[in-house]
Image (cartoon, rainbow, N blue to C red):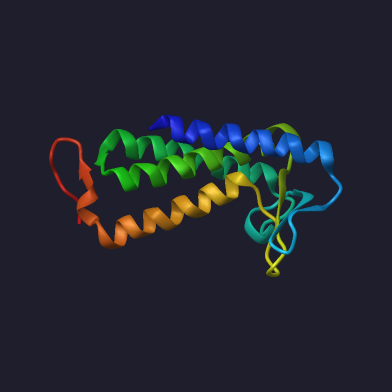
Length: 151
């Protein structure tokens, strides 16, 4: 299952390296999705801009928390997938924050006015949505190791 987190991290790094080499905006699929290189010192929708180190520490804390959840709970497949997407995405953005001081964003939806984002952001958002579904509709999916159930 760790392979999913590593795959997200690798795909995120590769797309960011690619975007850094291009920098000029263009359409990948005209009218649907394009590439627009940006440097984001904040988080989603540029909230907390200029606080890369704080956001880096938060990301690191969430990564540690994710690993602690894996150690403490026996999780079903959907929940494990959600956490691996979140861990891979958090690690991808953490690397940017630590080494360049900002997160590289490049994916621009052309059919709607929306924030520019990256592969890590997409993985984090998808993972959060899946985790929310798991918590709301599958509380039995969280079983403490040793047999004790939550929810």
